[in-house]
Length: 143
Image (cartoon, one colour):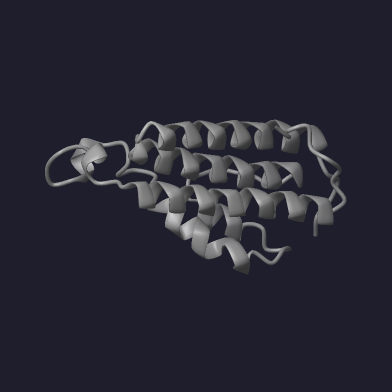
């Protein structure tokens, strides 16, 4: 059961999600595809944590799909696949030792970055829709 909503906490985390997604778009424009993928993950993580914190739930960890599953009172089926796709970008986009040779920039493409951004956008849109369906108002986290 969902209790009182914390609009301020939701808005604060959602604002961070949106700013991080904007930063990911800039990385895409600069051909920094690994960073666009990682920041897309981060944006989705912040957005889901916004929802969790906004409804008074704990929000620990970095797996977007596991965080989404903590929202058992809502239907998350439409975004679970996107969350799992983004989870794959958390470590290997940043660490050279995640790869047998080279560095992360050698392994990510424009297509990867575009798909990551689209997944993050879908998750952010879903979070806002769920928040509003729970009785949350317009967020100060708007661009």
